Length: 73
Image 1 (cartoon, rainbow, N blue to C red):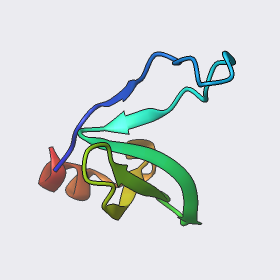
Image 2: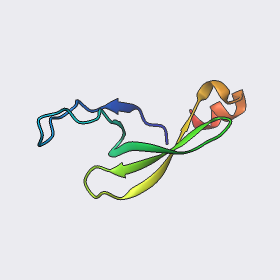
Image 3: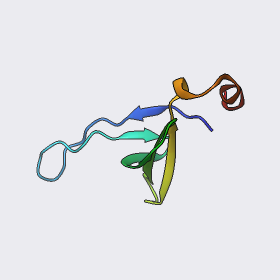
């Protein structure tokens, strides 16, 4: 499934300093990179409500051949 990635607006923490601006894929906040490969990378995703951790593969479309692109579009 292909979803768009969105930015969350920085929030102020308890100390009054702004927290890190995170990227989201659906309900998952993207955190650290778990691995890198030829076509993209795998990031740790944390569900914003449940805290469940998942691996999210982010694929660079420019590195895929035409037949693979037809399958995922």
